[in-house]
Image (cartoon, rainbow, N blue to C red; front, side, top):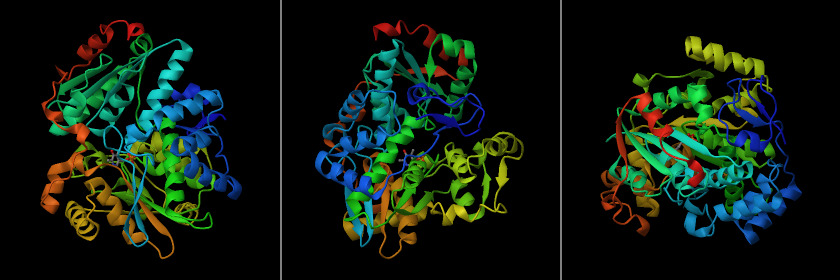
Length: 479
Ligand SMILES: *Cc1c(COP(=O)(O)O)cnc(C)c1O
């Protein structure tokens, strides 16, 4: 399997070659040259695989179709080490719960940091360690976080050979729980840097360091952001698992409702659907930061500035542009790299928006690709959290509430609606307390988290000081 760029101007590469990279050299995102097709017989086999051999075995069967440059024995072992019951809280890994007639919740947030990003990031940690050892090299992962991504990356990379993580976070601007989650890690290969500034300052430093190509090469700087293809691939697996858990036969169809920000999660759903998984609708649920809802309603994609990006009770969905959206547009526009390059390159750089509502292909977005969308407000999420709690006793988090609110409104008779639970309520205790008058339970492993000793360096928002720290962090080979 070869991987091509959405902007059509980069050479095709293998899985292992793009694993450690971010953007393609032409500024595009990598996608496989074709999607392997899953017919009814294979779907039946995979249903058996999940039921009898579990999630890790299903993950291996799916991954091997996309990864042909890691020996199967090794890939199988990597999957088995990643998707373990004691890492993800149960043998099911992504268990399904019933919310209401025809409406289900698929739990994606029982991993180490209680958010769905663990499902992909944990795999990435094992793949990185494997590939770096194979190449006899090392990597300095540099990232910026306002919460979920940074902690998922740290818990995936902690203790891994050949990898060191430098994670920038805005000093004093995350919740006490989020800070404690990251800063209490004592692993020597994890370096937490609290920047005196806001998230955008952290992001700007990462961009500035990455733009210094000489520094980047010399210190083997890499990233783990949401455009990484392996993260998307890992996410394809749980759409298949959710389908098998919500249905009894492969004649049935299922819809998924996905709390969305950067379009990474739902893009994996699109890929599963392109492979032939019987998905009826893909419901894109946003909060007040409705870049995506606006596109799927109107055909206009309009990126926002930071002044227009609102802080909400579902902070991991507070985005100004959806970095994975380009992948869907590439498929939808017949994989015309030149056109995608024009839209996402020059057009967005100029007017910050494009309008495809008049394109002959516009009706296909809903009709052929099954996309619908909706958004919810803070008050609607609170009401949804309350209603779900009253009805079922389940406590959902504010991100998941976006999915329940929009998903259940789009449910159709005879087609199960599976809402993806992207975080656990325990992460957002204050919002939950306000909604239902009691606090969500915390998994026992987080008892006393905020009281544990913390390891973090506070620094001004200064690129040279961050570079200096990386340059003097010592010899990675000894990590
Ligand atoms: C990252 C995140 C999202 C958004 O996912 P995308 O892949 O960016 O669309 C939603 N909910 C939670 C809890 C997240 O951490």
